[in-house]
Image (cartoon, rainbow, N blue to C red; front, side, top):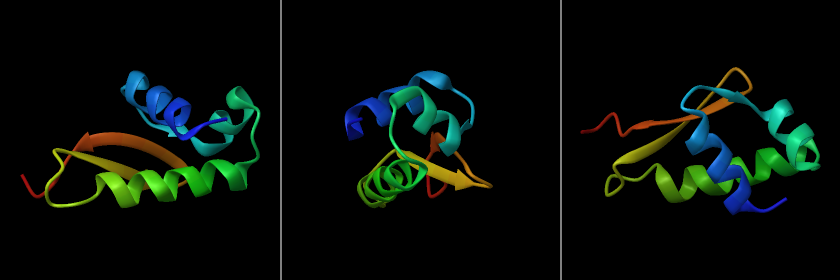
Length: 68
């Protein structure tokens, strides 16, 4: 499981994806997926980014940066 794979699935989904589903599909543990999600949030959730990674109730989704 790579960060790129997690990012691609979240992006392609267009709707919230559960961390549990990501771990099952990619063969990683829930904890590993949560670590990757934390890395992606650190990269994407900045003022200069047009994309924001929303993490809510165990699911993640890319949305437009709310600051825009």
